[in-house]
Length: 97
Image (cartoon, rainbow, N blue to C red; front, side, top):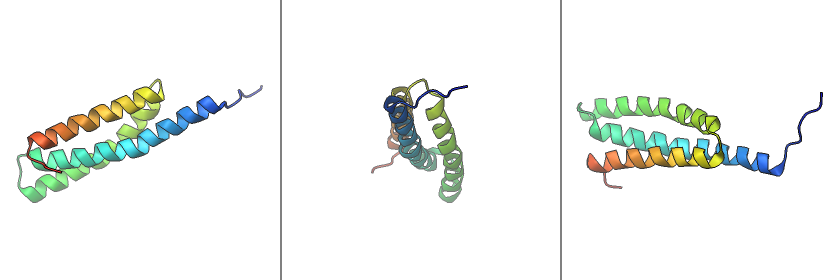
């Protein structure tokens, strides 16, 4: 049984997905923590802790979604979509970068 050759295009796709998982996953998790801390109807400290715990769950989910996507472009599109969504929620809730 022969193994298929790993082409440069395939390796570039895997590298792009890994970058989307790392950089994009961090962005999604950070903005989810900010949005949650601003938007949750709790005391400030409790909202920050709850949002941070949710964000810690969001990063591996985002990374898995990047490798589940059909292409690296779709992986980046999904990450950017959720990053923009959480940035919008945070901005509406009163966060100013």
